[in-house]
Image 1 (cartoon, one colour):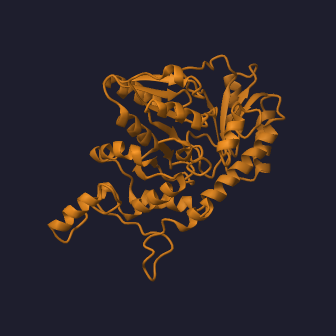
Image 2 (cartoon, rainbow, N blue to C red):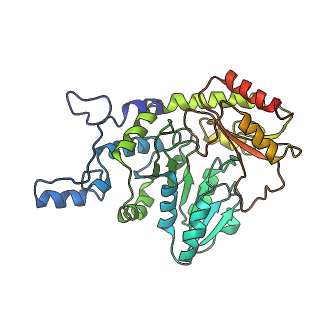
Image 3 (cartoon, rainbow, N blue to C red):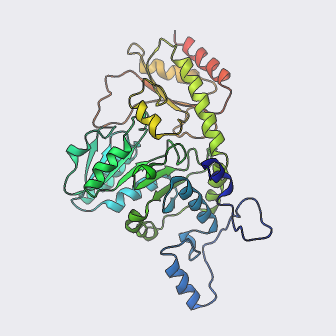
Length: 386
């Protein structure tokens, strides 16, 4: 079954029923009732390996349907849901953290991950070391006590590309698992587990939900690492509400058409921006000039609506802020992946690479508006900079 068809036909509830709704029902439950003690104990045992009702905090049938669909897309063994994408990333780090452990993280990881490292993991005695954004220095930095490599590709804000099969081959030769923040491709345009990655983390808040009205994180894991992961989320009480699961499932039914529309619109906006003399560089992995483009084309089925521009050095931060403030169809907002276009003046959080002497960066999320309107809006904002 093709991926596009999976989005439509998988995870739609109990197919054994002679009559049923087209969408799975929302099951809200904190307490699950059992016929007798034997049945209760049976399901407590079953939940160790299967998706079964046992307790509300372990999820309901609505949660299970979402887990089923994302596992089908990612090729994972099991999935675990979290209230946010950052909570999902935090849980992955916590699962491999211990006193004197060493964890490698690529420089282009989602910015708030650094706060987890500084405010929590460092206090536990975990050594965090950052790799280059493309992980090209991983062999030199692996230690005997390295427990995990966490990466993001394309990277946050500047979309640096990692050769994932190469990274995984090196890591696995040292028995080190590899996890990736796969939010950019959202389990659809890139399937990292099929390239050797052990753990894929997706902020379903973004493209999976797709309408800027739900927050959720998902961890998808292969069978080997699931045995190391499945206990901690339950111990700490992590899950997602059935209502949020329903919204993400609803969003995923149109994931293909939305992702391709974002990609098409972004390509058209990049073509326009390429003609602007105010811009020093455009960061967009579908561009042939983007560093790592050939690897991106090899491993990814497409790009999304994210792009970043770097202004020429003669344009100040104040002028860049004025440019963004003058945009009428691009809103200012920290998230992305919804139907709307966004623009923010930003600084890429990096440890290994110094961008302090670069031009001012503006990150865009290209939404589903008509690109002629978006281009006209960009043009008038550029004109007001003169």
